[in-house]
Amino acid sequence: MYSFMGGGLFCAIVGNILLVVSTATDYWMQYRLSGSFAHQGLWRYCMSGKCYMQTDSIGEWGKILLGRGVTKTNLLESQDSLKSSGTSLKSKVQEGAIDTYWNATRAFMILSAMSCFAGIIAGILSFAHFSAFERFNRSFAAGIMFFVSTLFVLLAMAIYTGVTVNFLGKRFGDWRFSWSYILGWVALLMTFFAGIFYMCAYRMHECRRVAGPR
Image 1 (spheres, helix red, strand yellow):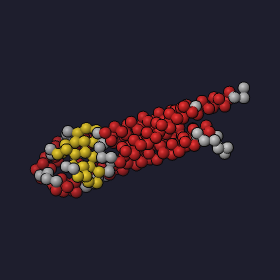
Image 2 (tube, rainbow, N blue to C red):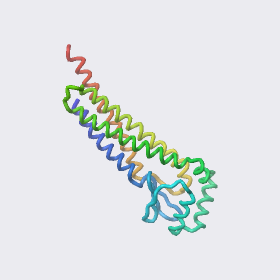
Image 3 (cartoon, rainbow, N blue to C red):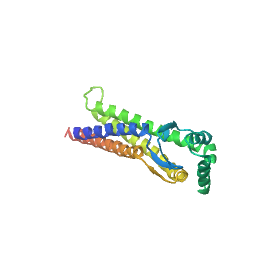
Image 4 (cartoon, rainbow, N blue to C red):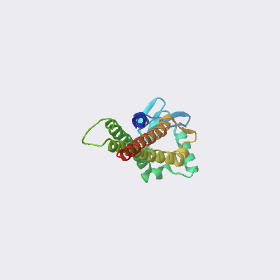
């Protein structure tokens, strides 16, 4: 039982660290815009060595691009290629899709990290002996929190993947997912296995408790 709990706690700690790193870093997506290499995360996007906060205004975005040396001709070419793909960036912004997309992904990633941290606390307490609680209850609670964390990060990754493939991928022709995005999926696996380990520990304790009186 303790080996399962130890393995689950290790996976959970690693998963929580990966969640924080993935959420905070700016390499969810890499792309080329008018010949310049750029990358972006959930909070900022970076071009030519400088980073800017995510905005939902195409006007502000265009001013930044022009300030970085991107010509109006290149900017218009980017808009023309966007229209030719059948997607209007302006209409997307007006509908509030971009703002909702960022906020939902950020919120689910933060909730996932918080749930995982709560599960870690419960998992550590499951090693202790307190007369006021049963150990298997804390193991069960830890497992549930890890599965909740897995659900939240899955929702975040699904939203980001769907919107990126269907919208941002058409906006930027030469693009790919980067290491911050990959860390999110690895964190999902770690929290899932942490939940599995703690549920196995809980079931093992239950079997021993039921078979004990016999």
